[in-house]
Image (cartoon, rainbow, N blue to C red; front, side):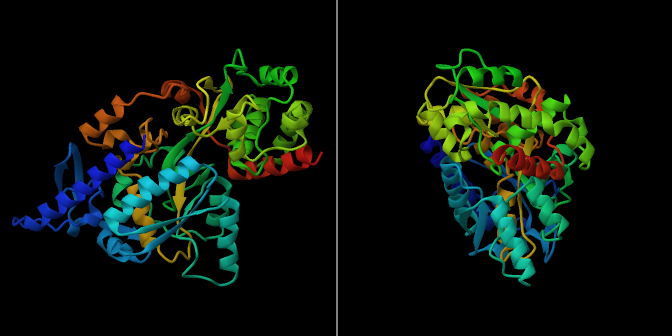
Length: 448
């Protein structure tokens, strides 16, 4: 797997060099293209296209790349301000695979192409949201400790509503032309309008992983799962909230109790919550004695993969439909792991990056955000032999060659077909609902 990552980084480096040489040697009046903007793509008419190592790359001519972001009017100003800087990217660090991929496939490449050093800072989203809130309360309006955040849902809503997000910027960076901003699933983050304050970088969809060596038939209804847990005590559990995977499991139960997501897609309604919450708490309290370790403790989400691999439990959960296949390929999981989605559907959302209001280096943050929605990087994310993620960008905006590459990808052995995932996709509730669900679980299940 790693050699393929290395090969695509070499291609990008060669492309940057070739573009630089072509621009420097041009005598037809075309604008100079530097290695720093070798991956930027725009829909502007004033572009030049260079093909290197079998990949087509479109770069914006320097004079024609406007951007609408606080403190900047052109993309060239952003690139110049970002050159030689460090970007502190605070992000969930619970996956060794994601951590390595970010360091290798983003960190090393933006260093090569843009002379930016990526400092990945592992942290829970709630912690770095509180850090931004604390800095604001302390009057730290510039030079903040966080430049870029992996953020979404109620955490984004908290900072947006407090006017603590830098922007808008996300719809004007060059590669924003590949983002389907008209899609409500992109334009809204757990019901909160994005309004250019976040940029997507991956698509997520909930699946349940199970070990076919111990589970003869996937329990695709919550009733069937309840029966299986009682008949197989100690072999099922779910992550403790506030873990985001534990939270989505609880959200699925609310949708099941209500017969669908419709009542949770608007503003929080206490009467609706009070109607369905007792059904959810009764379900979870009913299965608790037969959970792993008798329900006396709930594992962290990151620990569940080890429990699954060691066959202590026979189910796991993920927002990454390809994770099971990736873990099988790496030897983390046995070959017997497969995935399923519940008959009632599966929650789907997008991963975003955002920039705090007081970021010390918003220019570097925008360059990285722009890079990760480029077709070149999105192809790396979508490749089942590399990241294996679902992507939030629109491939019809890519070159024919890039679209053909995407179409050539297979899927992992444990990954559900994309058509099945698309048919099962459900929208996330508004953020206030998530806050209420999580607080209710702590009060009525964990502390009950």
